[in-house]
Structure formats: structure tokens, C-alpha cells
Length: 455
Ligand code: 5AD
Ligand code: SF4
Image 1 (cartoon, helix red, strand yellow):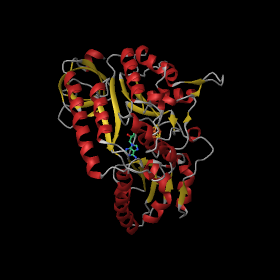
Image 2: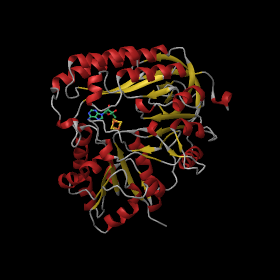
Image 3: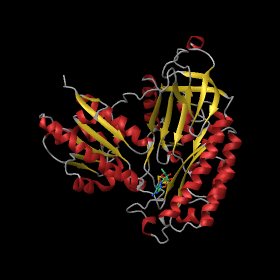
Image 4: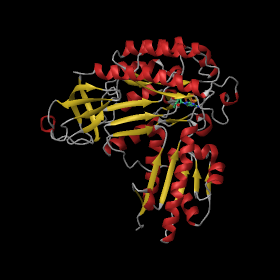
């Protein structure tokens, strides 16, 4: 019987990192590692990092400074804390991590964490472990069965990207595009549902470029739309989502799935980045604004209530006031339920970082504030328009206020369900609610029946 050891994992960045963190816990569980909340007392701390913007990457170094103190304190008690840097910072600047924080024991990229048992053994012998190559064997084949993630689970179906947008580090940190075979995805979905998942979000940097092997061994590929249809056979799965998509890969199958498949939720995160053709071209996005508008129109014809979300970058090199105005015009025309927006951040190794025409920081800040005001106004309008609406909420946790529970609407709104505890609901329940009020980032709702009515 293995002794129990404490594992603390901190996650930055996208949902794929959240998925990877949960899989690292699955890989380490057979070695006796149990997750704990307190970094100061952990036998192993893994920082699962993000490299997408400079700010995210720099945070790691201050965290490593804090961890060094904990490591020294534990050493005084004769205990050894293993510190690991995982994820995209490890992949992109592993050597730099080792130089700036020599007290780090392990550095490994997103494609190597299935090798954690070997790495733990090496580290126990006092070796410094660095694994930032892309191993030839597919990581997913070597991962153990999922240990479950609760009612709303993530499932990576596709990784990497071949699109090379000129601002983006993903093709360098996550590597070339790869799709998992659809049979493996369906098997993992069944495992997740058996362990309590009611909702699954299919993940990929370019998830709608999915083209995994069909389950019949025919050598044919399944599209994402076909995979979603295949997942409707998973008994007990009540909701499906997917993210992140590229406008070019919104094919007919997927658009039809939004019309025909009732467990596919009416929500789509579809980044456009800019509303100016000139900037889209400089970003190597490979589509024009009109193509994006067309996709939105077709989607809305297929599923009229679909809630749209987006990513925008302001202050990309060469962006003029007019280009920025074009972005605002697109936002006004499309109307978003939610959105993320960022100042352009030059990333090492990307084409845009070495291009001319960098936009001064104060201009970026001003544009970001204007865009975010507009997006917040739209999100607030969307949430207020929900007042009076009735829909199911998947309860994911207990809220801060007494009796309150927290979950997500079909449209991916955060929903505070007041009185959910009194009504007898539990985490993992799908609860019918009526929306009472709407805010910038959430809505508040009341349950329409109690747990005993719906049991
Ligand atoms: N600078 C700013 N934002 C970026 N993103 C990706 N790379 C950069 C960068 N260099 C944003 C894009 C992407 C989201 C995940 O992060 O909007 O869709
Ligand atoms: Fe990055 Fe563009 Fe690939 Fe998205 S599509 S991961 S933004 S390179």
C-alpha cells in the first residue's frame, strides 16, 4: 500500500489546462498522490501554466518565488517539496524557467504529462527533469481512466493548431493539430457520465477542425458535428458544448447539429479577433469579416436563440482608428451574450511580434476600455432580456449566500438559484428556474419546483 502524499495543482489559462490538470491528478493517483488545497504543505506542487499573453506568463515567476519559501520551510522539517512547472510556459521557455527558478524540480510541456510517473521517480533520485519534446506516442493512449470531474466536465478531443495566426503561440506550445479517435472520445464520455457528469464540454484549440477516426475502423474521419451526434447515444448525458472554434471550420454538419440535436446547448464561442479585413489579413485569419457575418447568419437561421461569445484583440500592429471602429461596428451588428477582449501582447517567436507599426500602450488601453464598455453593455442587455425566461440550470456548486446554489443556463450564463438548498436540490441536478434579474456577468433565478417534485 502506497503512503498518501499531498498534491497541489494550480491552473492558469484555458479550459484545456483545466482538463490537463484533472488528468495529471488521474495519472498521479495510483502513485498515492491526493489533491490538497494548501500549497504550503504539499509534497508536490504543479503549476499548470499559460503562455498566451505576457501577463499570464509573468505571474508564474512570482508564484515560484512564494513556493520557494514553502519548500525551504518544509525542508527544515525534513520534507521535500517537488515543484513542477507544466503547461505552455514550460513548453515555450523551459530553459528560462530553470534559469530564473533553479529550485524547480520538473519542467514539462502539455504533451508529456502522461510520463509523470517516470518523472516523479527521476526527481526522487534528485535529478532535474525537463521534458519539452513532443513524444512520438500519443499522450491520450497512455492516460489512465478518468477519475471524474463533477457535473460539468471537460473532454479534450483535439489538440494543437495548424492555422498560425500571426499573434498566437499555440502552434508552438501545443504543436500540430491532432484529433483523438471518436471511439476513445465516446468511451471517455461514458466514464465521465458514470462518475457524475451531466454536461460535457468538448475541448480543442481548434475544436471544430476535429477529424478523428470513425469508430467503425473504416479509416474515414468523423467531423465534430458527427461526433456530437455520436455522443447522443451516451445515456445520462444531458448537455454538450464545445470550444474553441474557428469561423472557417463551421461546416454544415456542425451548423445542422445546432438545429437538430437537443442536448447541444444554444451557445457558441466563435472568436473573430477583429472587425477589419486589413487586420484579419495581417493576423493570417484566412477569412474576411463578411465570411464571419455569413456564418453568424446561418447559425442564427439554424438555431435562432443561439447565444454568441467572442474573443477580440485590440491594438494589433498596424491597427488604425478606422480598423478599431470597424471592430466596434461588427460588435454592434452581431450582438454578443458574452465576450473576452485583450490588448495585443507581442509573443516571442510569432510573426506579428517582429512586425512594424506597434500600437502605443495608452492607445491600446483606450481602445480596450471602449470595446469592453460596449461588450459589458451587450452582456447586461442579454442577461436582462432573460428576465421571466424559464430554463434548466445544471447545479455545479453551493453559492456564497445562504441557501443559494450556482449553475449554468443553456446559454452559458452563470445562474444564482436563490432558495435552491431549501428546495432540496443537490449538485448535479438539472433544476427548472425562472429568471428574476440580470446583471453584467450573471442572472438570479428562483426554482420553479422542489427536488421532491422532480425526483
Ligand atoms: N495578444 C493578445 N491576445 C491574444 N490572444 C491570443 N494571442 C494573443 C496575443 N498575442 C487571445 C485571442 C485568442 C484568446 C484565447 O487569446 O483573442 O482567441
Ligand atoms: Fe491561435 Fe489562431 Fe490557432 Fe486559435 S486558430 S489557436 S488563435 S493560431
